[in-house]
Length: 103
Image (cartoon, rainbow, N blue to C red; front, side, top):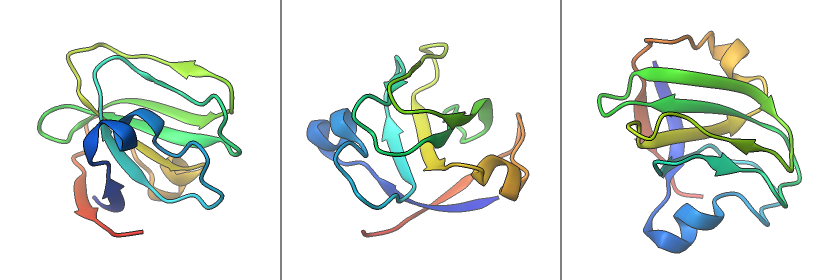
């Protein structure tokens, strides 16, 4: 499964992610503890990946002002537009190839 996403670079981009963005674009963040959606203007789908880019956890339609955590041994998370999990038929164990895009 190929997904086009911007890869977050640096602590600022990894910390703030999509906060303050008016348009949504898929984003890959390297983090080990979880994410929050405080100050986001839109819900999102969340895909947690292991070191081999296999899906280990999914969360659909995570609303603004929420917290989502997972096992800290997994260090990558994809933030996707809502309903992407259903549209792409993503499931646990699927392997994902990330194509880095510029926004």
